[in-house]
Image 1 (cartoon, rainbow, N blue to C red):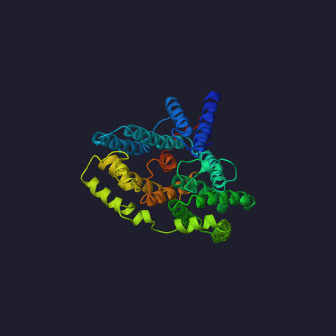
Image 2: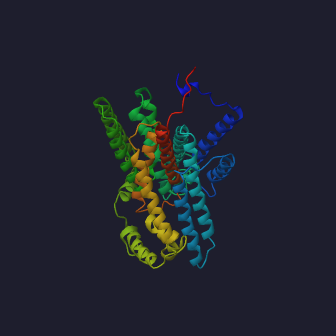
Image 3: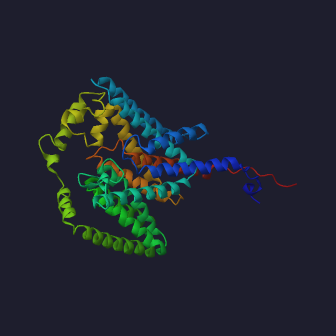
Length: 419
């Protein structure tokens, strides 16, 4: 018998097992609440604050692979705190930085909790799908004024679900949609109708958000998912299945969106929002000109301008995460954010195609980090809660991979031969 078989099993502690089960349930519930941020502070913040404190008090550790994530995010926020010193009016600045710091800690928490048990990834994505479906349904019902008071789930005739902004609502739905798409392409055909139904709801929610960033993110993520799956699975039968299901899903989605476009209200708003450059993008002091002015100002101010200062100067926020990191978090924050994005993409790419229990979740999170880095050119994402969850997933999977490699290379324990 092997040494592993001969060694005694670790003692079972019912109380510890029960605590871990409750803790995992709290993690899933926290992710579920991330779909309901209609006001701040939201229930998500309260839930996450409690469980982050409890988990670390009960012994959750930050490992060496996760430490760079903590360091980069803390330095990123140190840059933001330093920017407060150059503000003439700091009345709103401290609260902004408090939220930024909390979200940074949430990313580190997710990474640590995933490293502690990769089985939680399934709970996280199932909770994300549940929250996304509910908030998407609310947004759809609100858009079509399905009941009295439903307009609370819309803004400027755009679906926003239980969010404050359609431009956050739409991108939030993309990760669970991608998860359902993966399950559809890789799972049993018997469950396909269930996945397709969920996909239709989430796709309609993304469409009715009329967020160009969400549309672009969804298209990019879908194409990337199919491409990565085709690279990973090289058998002709599986590739034929992926191609056939992808084609069928695309036709079904086109038909569904075509049906929605029969509404004159939807059609007019779609044609307006589908323009690549809106009037507020290319106009004098529009988005693109503000980007140029903002970058020039930031080059002269190493500590930045301070949270929301550029928005007060020009009447609109930066709408560019790279510019936002310069103006709100200073040069230090900018360097840390760029380093964070590239390091996250690099560590995820290295194990993207390796056969691991956590590979599907890493694949989805990595694709969406890349997608959010792209849409960050036209929108601010530094306070998007789900982005920090994605960071936590990639770094948590990186920590799991590091441990897996250590376990493989560790020498086997010595065995004692019987006399």
